[in-house]
Image (cartoon, rainbow, N blue to C red; front, side, top):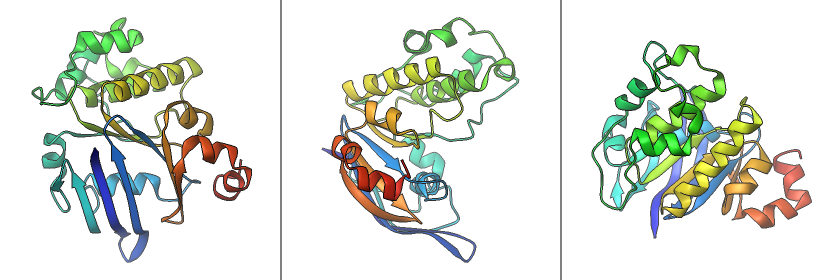
Length: 235
């Protein structure tokens, strides 16, 4: 069952066009990796889906509803979660208080997350529940941002570069968390440059180059395709 479908998505910053007819879909219980070099348009794609850019054309369907042009807060209330690359935690609030800012009512068809269940997934956070977020490491803040998004009980999660700049132990916890979301039937769109991390958790891959989709296919096949990896990722 397809939960998120994007067709002919174009996005602009001022007069500059950044995305060109991007199309992708993510099904229930599926992890799709959105890959490409720096500047390929991965983060822009996620922001466009979430309604965070001033000028976007195309169609975004979520749970069978057209959310194109909808305000970001309305999109979030429908169960589309977004974890931005720049984290945006509240530094003056504690871990528990940050989690409470993301709380939404339980929704049918989505796992129900509470601070206690999240602390079992992210034990590091459980050990610092009363710590102010400004006193956490970058990796800990990244975990907190993911956990805060899950407090909204989303059906689909957009994860923008979750492994970037964090310690290997945190990356392992991120991978375990994504695989758990997948087992529970959530759909995940993962923007990622770390091919090893993406390979661990993803079913399919969509590769962007200069704002255009250049490759779509199974992740394992892409990993084995040396020519495609070198052409699109330089690895």
